[in-house]
Structure formats: C-alpha cells, structure tokens
Image (cartoon, rainbow over all chains, first blue to last red; front, side):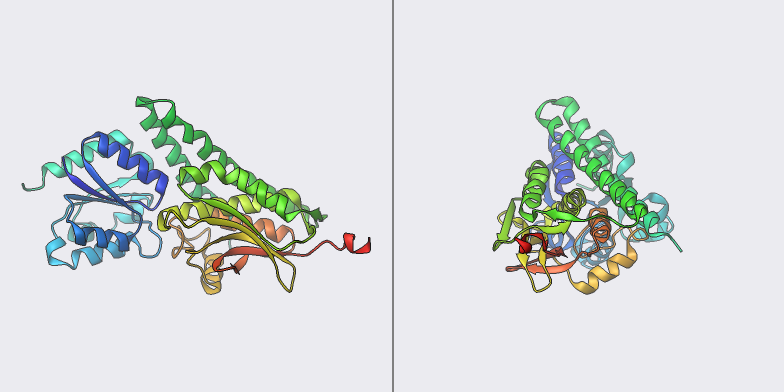
Length: 128
Length: 228
C-alpha cells in the first residue's frame, strides 16, 4: 500500500481516480492545483505523484520544474496522466527523464484497470 | 485565417473530451458496483449534449443573420438555468444560488439563446469547483446597471480580468487552455455562451456582482411595459 498524491483539476474525475486507487488499497490525497500539491508534499512526502499537466493557474510542467528544484523531492516518482496528447509531449524524452517522469498516460486511452497496473509497476521500482 | 465557427468547433471538440472521459471512467467504476456509481453518467452526458446544442443553436442563429428579440424574464431564465445545473452542481459539490438584486421587468433577448448561454457558461464555472472552498457558492446573478440588466455567473473566487478574457477570446480554438488562470479545460462553455450572447447583440464580459466577480452580459430592458 502506498501513499499517492493525485493532482487532478476536475473534481469529478478526481473522485473517480481516487476511488479506483483506494480500492487497490492505496491511500490517496487529492488536490486540484500546483500550489495545493506543493503544500501537500511539504506536509508529507508521497510515495508517488499522479499528475495532470493541464492545470488552472500554474501548469503541470511548471509544477514539475518546481518539484525537482527541491533536493529532498527529486526522487519522488511521477506518473503523468493527462489530456495532453502524447505526440505533443514525447518530443523531448531527455526532458521527461530529467523531470523523473516514470510513465506517461494519455487519459482517453487509459482505463482504470490500466492506471492500477501502471501504479503497481512504478511502485515496484521504488526502493524500499 | 480560421473562421470563428471553426474555432468554436475546435474548442468544443477539445472540451468534449472531459465529459466523455467522466462518463467512460464512471461507467468503468460502476461496472463493479452499479446503481449509485452509474447515476452521474446521465447528468454528465446531458450536460455534454447541452453544450453541443448550445453550439448548434449559436451556429444556426448566426447563419440566419438578424434575430427577432422578445421580452424575456431574466429571473425566470436564471431559475431555469439553476434547475438545469443543479444535478451537476451536486456532483461537483458546488453550492448553486440565484441572486436577483432589485426588481426589474423583462429584457429584450432570445429566450432559448439566453437559457443556453447561461447553462453552458454555468457548466464551465462548475468545472472550477476544485479550486473553491465548499462553502462558497456559485451564483447565478442579475442586477441593474446604467446600461441595462447585467446577468451572468459569479463567484468569490473567480480569477478573471478583462485583459485575461480578451486574450482568451483570441486564443480559443487554438489553445487547449485559453483561460488557464481559471479553467484547466478548453472552456468551450464560455465561448459558446459568448457566441450566443453575440446573437442577441450583446457580449460576455468580466463583471462584478456584490463582492463577486464573474462573466456576464448586459441586456436591454424591454420598452413595452413603459407604454402602459
């Protein structure tokens, strides 16, 4: 069981994803924007972050750069689960690696079962 | 140069990803526990249909050219809009209120366009629920101004300015987030509403209502009753 920080601007989708992850026995904190995410991580470092790139105010990419600017937060694994199409994001694989993105999931093609599998796969790679 | 209708269509297509995604994932969740989990699907689907209908109405009326306006009761339309948005507001845990500041007669408008505009605008505002404290309501409001009756959607936490909205008008249909300071989505509901208000020879703009800000249009009072 892991502690997941879910950054999802749409409240309805946030509840759906949180419900799915809780059924898979994870503990989930749900926030809707980058600022709230930083505050949440400051309180307690999660085992995994699931991030939508299309956020209001500060974008998910801005959040990623801010997150990785803190030494103690550089190793938190991130799954990007987003409405941004993959062809617009995959142009820079080195950038993805530098930002510590463990997996990129395009929401329209990611069913809940797939999300659960990917979360398990990423968490398996996290050192104990 | 991209035609305005095509830009709106692109914004609409981008926007529709969200309700379709909500429907698909909710259905997936509900397939294990039907009943309660499946109920939101109808509400989301209905709102997506309203959005498409709003676009089609604006497209049809713009193509017609001139539009015959009629006396319309703003308060009735606001209450009808609240009724349309109520179930979705509950799904978003967003309290909805109707505020009518003062008494006024009918305005010159097109009933169907006004209802569609306020409904699609409301849909966009409901999406911002995640940014708001649960106790702060989304307000369907109207008040008198020097130019006429201002009617629209307002909240205490709407992060809008005239400049932002002007930029958003230039960006929609080309940017995935034309109103990024406020909306994570394409905000097509806002631009469909803008197009519908355009059909009524008015325009959506950033406005204030009591201590709240939001998006509203100014409608001219009907002169008919003044002859009585």
